[in-house]
Length: 331
View 1: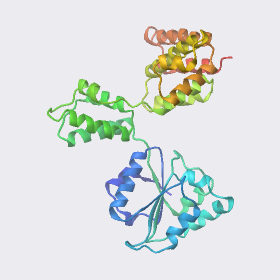
View 2: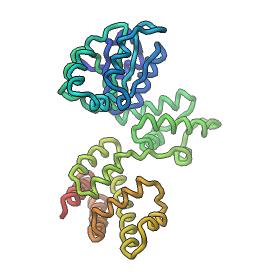
View 3: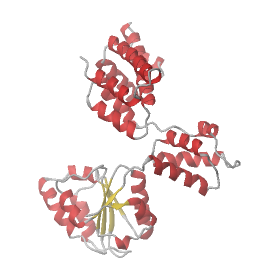
View 4: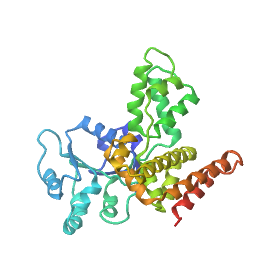
């Protein structure tokens, strides 16, 4: 069954054209939210969260008649968490129950998965449901969306500045919406957006995957190599990643040096102005996984990597991969 594109459905929204059961999946949560908002404009919607409700809650909604609208409409967010809570018997009966939902009732299932599994209940659901994919925009499409938003508000931005703005927002529509609104307010008395305006107003998006990548790297987890490729595919430049690694190495060296001299770890973290509990815990965990001499070795190798890239003009992507491979495989 052909999948439907969520952007086209939002632009030409008509719930009557949808099947009683709709499964939405993909990594772009902003578009999923827009789709649900369109649905809420047309009818009363029961909003359910998969980590809070069970099979019985779902059955209760569709076993009673709607009081104020034609049929019952429900949206089940985080379908993946919902599935983990089901008993074996409930998991077995779920596809049959969903298959019996008919018009005017409607159930929208929202999954966080990037790719739908071939196993149950997805295998059977795909046979009777509309499948909608909500993927991240391509870099080109993301840039176009930024330009459209800016121009609809009567402002101008040249192509070079637009690309610079896009690089700050990292293809994140949620973050882009907030930052563009701030930017438009700031330049309300101007015709055009400049790089200086962006630097003053826009907060760069730092993908949480960057922090996961750093964890994997310092834990010598081979998964770091895959995450490196994912980060590059989602618009991170190798130089940005190398800079993040170097900054974290410097933090780790400072932390290890001061604690090895006898300073309590909490006091050292305070001196380093690291206040957030999660960040404090992450730094301590990483420091326990790597030796000081290896951190020094990483700095030397990063220097050699940048020399290859900027002086010898070697391939920047291959050289950063070689650096990661070396340090996740060292003993």
